[in-house]
Length: 138
Image 1 (cartoon, rainbow, N blue to C red):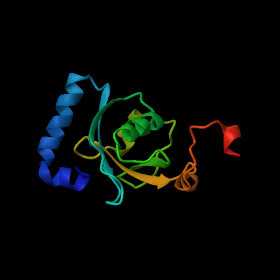
Image 2: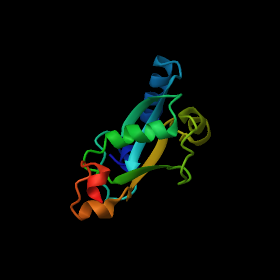
Image 3: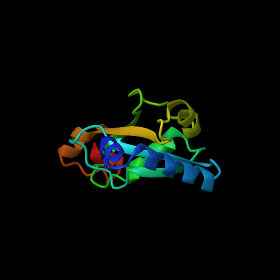
Image 4: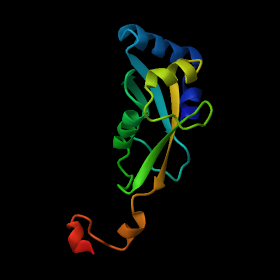
């Protein structure tokens, strides 16, 4: 579910109540996040709402998001952006930092993900089997 659809499907007070319930249950140790794709050319994510440890780094969270993308080829890299100002967060910062500075009024931290073909994607299209040893490739 995309962020706009999520916001339209659930009233502000419903979303805020969900966040308040989670924060009370986990004593603020978990952060409610919502991740949506940047455009329709990217495969949809299997899970959009995440409840993540506040000490998780952005790089670790990106790996969690990557694991939810079944249809993404291994040659594509995933990039996470903060929806509030459309900027890329620093990978070493903790989610708690961005939660305090970028959370939405409803209490969710909204992210957008995008993918880019990297990691030798052109070579894969040539039919090279990278499971072979490096010395056998060249």
